[in-house]
Image (cartoon, rainbow, N blue to C red; front, side):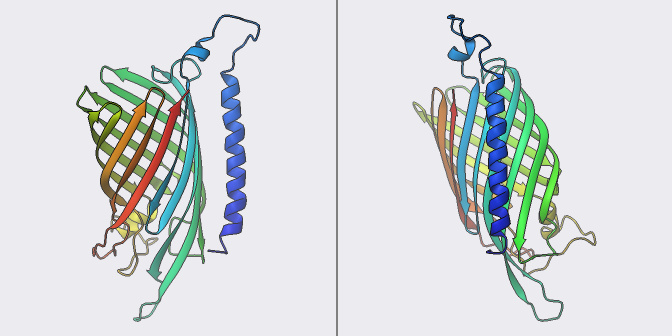
Amino acid sequence: MRECMPNAVRAQRRAVQATALAALCLVSLAAPARADDTRPSWRDIWKWRETWSGVDIARDNWLLYSGVTVAPFGHIHEPGWRMRLAGGYGQYKYEGNRGTGPTPQIQSFAAATYYGDALIGYLERWGPLTAKAFAGISYLTHEIAPLDPDNLVSGDDIGFKGTLELWLNIGDMGFASLDASWNTAHDTRNVRSRLGARFAPNWSGGVEGWLNLDNQSDCDLGWDDSAACHADDKTELLDYTRAGLFLRYDWDGGELSLSGGVSGGSFASSGEASPEPYATLNWLTQF
């Protein structure tokens, strides 16, 4: 762990500084053009910025993340163009057999991961359905110590990222949501789906499912049998699948959500499962 942390901390600082500078640029783009105009600008009345931050914790990994979305030409909930910046930093651990003989040699690895996204998108509404699509550039790093040459997801990578976010309002009864993303950096793919019910003013809750995949997961799960893949029945897979419950409190201009459940983050590639708990806390606000 100590071997990977100095570079990770320096890179994290650079990523935070770049994200903060870009966020200031986004806000300045939407600043009022005339300071001496006494009429209220639509930017003083409408919510056109959205920020979020949160923490995600499982048995052998954790992640801190944050982001901002700007609607430069209108309300954050109305159809129109969007600009988004997001980033995060976390750490994880895993083990695997790196021996070449008949006797397994279990090696422990510690990793630091961080990412940054710069995306442009559009929001559209069709009755109860709201859809947002984004595309742009993503930077993703996995710094593993000691070096693991058998892990395909290692080092820096820059790629194209696309996301799709769907929200279906089911009236007073509840809602359904689906968030999906694909990133060519390490072929990273994420899907989260929720089905929620409203049971009190401002309160809702329900069930959720996650899928987190990348180049190495395809090897571990047996989906890729190319020569580059290394998988063995002693390797513990990372946090690839999740199922759980969530509780959500929303108000005019934001929401706070807490979710938890079990992850398939600790099971051997031979199929032997040992689910572990996870928890996520997320705060979002529009202003």
